[in-house]
Image 1 (cartoon, one colour):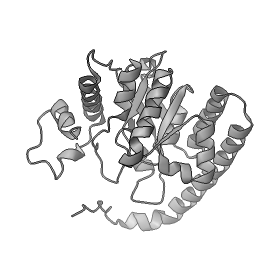
Image 2 (cartoon, one colour):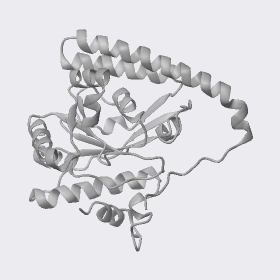
Image 3 (cartoon, helix red, strand yellow):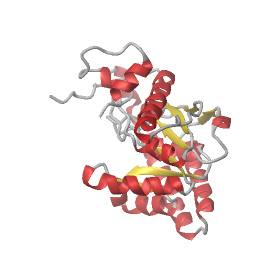
Length: 275
């Protein structure tokens, strides 16, 4: 039986604040549409991948400013100057724009293939060098090979290794693609923690909320020497344990399908990452 998402309790003040929230939501929608169309024009007209990514970064920052969602990036100096793979928790549709605003423009985003069917968004994402991947196992192996080629060519990548999100607070299990790419390239994985995006745009609701957002960059983790069959799961488990500890939210793999919840973050990560 599928667990139902939690319902937010009704409060009387919600009724009185409804007109303000609706007006704010309309403002955010108008701001997003305006910034998105501007980003589309810039993506089509601007020569050079890095220039397009810089323009997208400015557009994302402009949108967050207009939406009254100030962004703080903590420990940005921990991002290596060379190639790396950033992995981050996933909580909201805002996560992509926030990471676009926060990270240097040398990163390519790895995005689920469903986004390639969204006309305007797909055009912008392709022009920004994003990589679309399929969650269907029949296509996943081909996408994995393409990711490994990108990693081998020195591309820095951004992954949401959970692959999805839901209204519940917490961290899902991690897929292995990000960590296989890092091992193949011999580059570090940089765990990162997003805070505030679920509250700002709750997956179970339709009205956004203003407020601060934060991206915390954690310490990079280098792949251990040895065979990929051992290095990939070890890297995945270490990154997930670091994010889980810093996030301060529940381990969703221990919610209902785990007989005896593990006692430590590394143990929880190891159990969550088992095939």
